Amino acid sequence: MENQILETTKTPIVLTTGIYDLLKLQIKKKKLNKSNEDRLEKELKNAKQVLNRDLPYNIVTVNTEVLVKDLNTGEEITQKFVAPHRARRKHGTTSILSEIGVATLGYEENAIIQWDLPEGIKSLQILKVTRIAG
Image 1 (tube, rainbow, N blue to C red):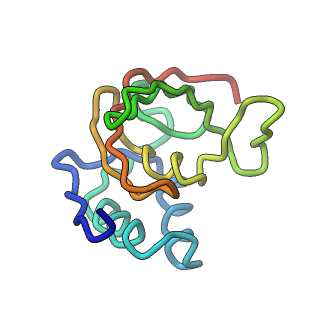
Image 2 (image 1 turned 60 degrees about the vertical axis):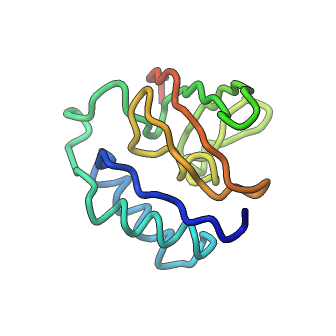
Image 3 (image 1 turned 90 degrees about the vertical axis):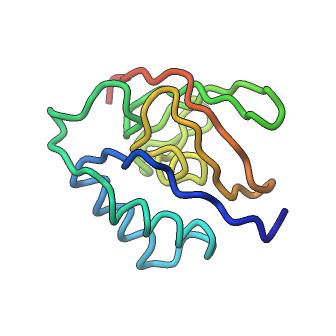
């Protein structure tokens, strides 16, 4: 399982320029494992950058609540993604730069992705994306 090669998504991710720059910085600072870094670099090369006002509402970005299904276990979890400095466990919020945040950023509802998370390679489906107040 460790040597499994992750397939790059067929649909380009959609990001605001600010989020795009933030992800590039994560790569530059070596904040990701090598597998995820390579994957993210490929995704960013094909990413579509848009202004915040033009970002579709069904795209995972900062200040979104996302219902994700682990296709390996069937478990569904909800994540509230916020800016890194606003993430607080007691408020039930997660940094957009967390492993799961980076894995889902830029994807739309119903997308299926694979990402190397701390507990192993996971296949995830984004079931619902809802904007929340920032």
